[in-house]
Length: 420
Image (cartoon, rainbow, N blue to C red; front, side, top):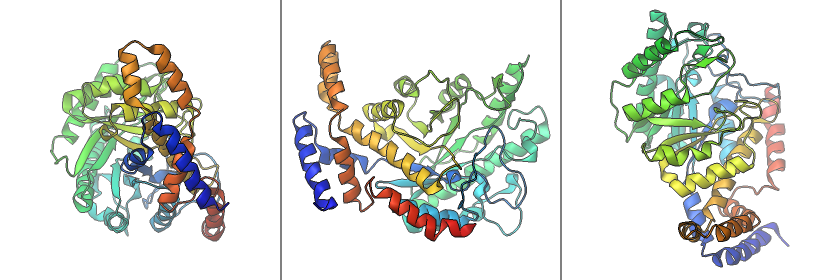
């Protein structure tokens, strides 16, 4: 049987099974097609960027491995991203860091401007996708001591405040150019390796810095601010200035989004449990999906239980309240494959979550029928959701999972390995 016919037949059979539970797979796929996933540019080149000055990564950020074929220029990175668009269905966005600017001569980070990202905006407009943005508070001499916005050195703090302001102007520019809000995420690597005696002062300086950066108001139609917390990192094992409690309170107090990264918490914590609590007090969440193996090790997202828990809670609490982005970097495998695997796994988990008979389960729970709830939830695990996702891929003209390896290997041979 031809693969296309097999996928269509499998979908029809799956559709019958789900309709018995009161679920319409056609409606689920329509909803899935409208949930954007923002692809992180830094997976494509190992977080190097295109500054014309030396700096490198830092602040606990390190892409390990030396797999051949990484993007060396912005054009090569865009080329790889365009190939990714051929491999994934649905609504894709692209997330840039400030170090991915394009300029003929070196530009200081406190002087970057929209003009240095004009090629990215033109490319995104041509491809019909939105752009998101991130200030780069690491990999720079002014961050060498591990402090940026919370630095006790006023010159250092002033430099990074200006960088933050520049990045917000660039984000607003992206939103105006592309007609979709650019989400700008602020994360800093500030913290102490050993136990400090004055945590309060560092956090007080961070509040003042953020207040100044966010002082100018931009319309929500063009850009949205978010702040990202972290448990700890290399060089800040004893105290992270921008902790979860710090940013959760700051976000609520100042009306900005809170960013939850699935790798930024204790290994026994599940961020999926946090969504409903936060959404009672905040309008939206920026979600960074990663995979912590030991801590925030930023492994490629796999289809595991916590990913499914995250997707379930996204759908149950309203997908329109989440901005979903990927955040990992693995240089030990093909980078295009790393992008595609993570993206498709997130989308598979969302697909499976959308096929849940939510009304039935809520009714059971409200009526105290926990036995029925458990029976249905367990049966859902073995339902033919993969047939539904395969059909989604077929309908969008992208490879199914069984076809993906050959496509990646062909591109690697024709394009990526020739960069060596």
